[in-house]
Amino acid sequence: MTRAVLLAAALFLVTASPVRAGYDEGLAAYKSGDFVTAASEFLPLARDGDVRAQRNLGYLYEKGKGVPQDHVEAVSWYRRAADKGDAKAQFNLAIMYFNGEGVFRNYRQAATWLRKAADQGHTEAQYRLGIMASTGRGILTDVVEAHKWFTLASMSGDKGATYARRRLVKRMTPGQIDRARRMALKWLDGRDR
Image (cartoon, rainbow, N blue to C red; front, side):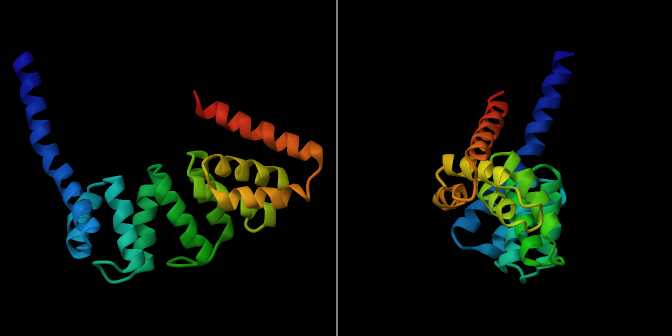
């Protein structure tokens, strides 16, 4: 029995190593500016379901680095990674919806994907979700919700969120500000568990 377990573990390591090496090689190629190699390393991994490779391939297609620029293809790869819970892909997909790149512009879809990323602590998603809540673009205007997201983003060092929160406070009652702070603390408390 022990021999079978060791054999299975060895087989796993042998088959897993090239996948990891391909990702590392793709990342190294990207960092050195060799986007064609990066794309060729990420593509088989992305097809096999590697979330990081899917997100990175989406980015290459979005920017036209190493592959022809193709926003529809970028959205496709971002969506695959976003559906698996990758916060960066969720954010990128939200921006594609917000700007109408590769998809029809859809602020509600943008807000949906931003919320998924923001709920995972993605700072820029929190900031942008705060903007959407404060302006009512894609979601109902809710200054309390906006303040909450601005607070969380500013706690991560986002200066834009800090500035936006200061401006928003001028439109809020003391009760709304208190409720927003409690919501932010509750969100943080839930993340600590």
